[in-house]
Length: 464
Image (cartoon, rainbow, N blue to C red; front, side):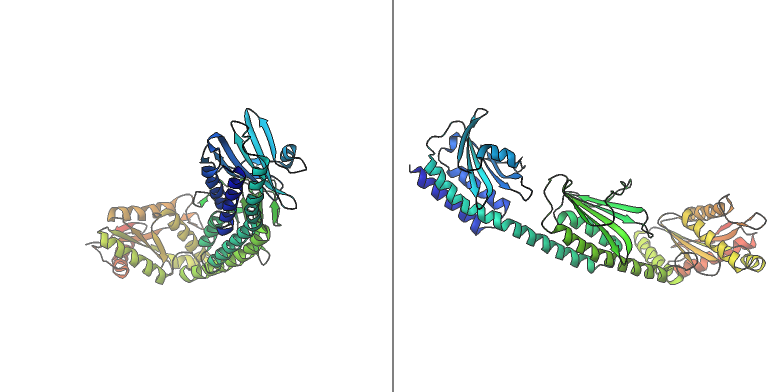
């Protein structure tokens, strides 16, 4: 066997694979796995590794093949550790260490780019210096190409991911979608191990929400939010954490802050990551401000200005949709109609500001008393209506009584003279009393006036 020719040919094949394929870690690993199957005296070889110099001066094991098995976990060596073996000459080195024989093959350009190590059970004298040098010269062609083009490929991929994320965010008018997409993309598109988004309150003074994502997990909201990291209001790269910190603002308003880190892999952020994420943060800030404005306008269009409950039209649309869904399933719904007792007297005696305060407090009590899936609206001056999906007549009556009890409780609504506010309530149930909101309101209105005729401050169920 002409070992020199064999190793030279093998080196050329590995270099060709790196030139023809993508300049990626996967291609480099595939090249060395091919080497393992074709290498002379492979039966005596225990391990083949290829270390590449990172931008921080450390050498990372991109390839680690042991007894034919590829291991993906990276090992690191410092410049001092490498120099203690290869010295300044960067020649091929043989050494015997810890019961095994090692061959170190440096790959150089104007400086040391990396090295290949071959570990064996014996010294492998058949691998002459000439043969190893032939392998070094040919495989170096491929590794130089990998070292040159891999950062460019990573940067191009990173910038493309930013473009995709920017497009995804700028077309969205939904605040929640923007926040979740940003956190999800920090891991899935930008390639960081973790993404943590701190969302500030409207004044920008405290954390309102914290949304978190990590490799292999979907975004989640942290109910016990961690304290805001002490990194300030300026974007920065955090070398000790392999992280990027970017506050998100719009027109001077503090909206959020994004922390992207590589706490698991310890990989450095991609080149120019800080500036790119800063620009992304600017777009996110503007998108958040726009989405919040749209949501505020939508809320004003659907919510009563005074009480915050649904306006008449929106209540009818939402309630009719619920009634239709539950009718298809054969499930009843209760409509509870409430009219404040003697409201005209309240306005006449204490003035309209006092009457408005009563309406606001009544709406607050309704909102916190009704079931979570119920829909509440204000349909007249002092008339309120609630649709409780899935509620029978018995449940609807219980909801009405719970509202009356809440009005009369110590935390309820009291008029001057320490007199509790009362209301008259009527309950109608679908489908027996009607299948549309209009039909149910008509039936509940009759029941409510029955409550007033019977002395007020009570709940009546529609008569069938």
